[in-house]
Image (cartoon, rainbow, N blue to C red; front, side):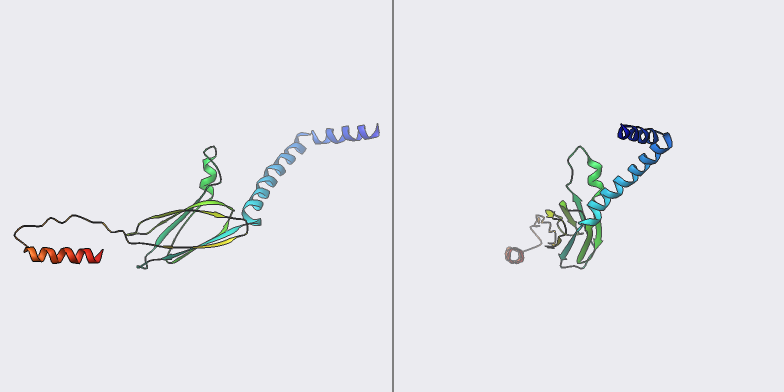
Length: 161
């Protein structure tokens, strides 16, 4: 009986509007901070992207998380990172997830890859950027080159490629 009266008094105290407001505010602050700590601080991972290229040019490396599906697209934007760097890009404090890596450098072919990072793992991956070569068909003017010069030019082109 005394236990029932005790719980009734506690319920009356908790039912006051100011006490309920404090409880809701504490709940609204504690839950996001706890989730942030669990996903972002406690077991974070790292990723180092090593880039080898013929030119020392600024490269854009972006990684996007694959945490969610289409039902929550804004969470993927929250866990997307992009850096501009030369030779080496370091991404610290990444939550463990599966990421799509997109590397782009002017004059080179873009690279896309999928990578999975576990909790507490420091992963290092390296990519080689290949120059983007566009081939065009050459139109020979009949009067400008002799047949022997055309054959020599074609052999040089074949040797290069």
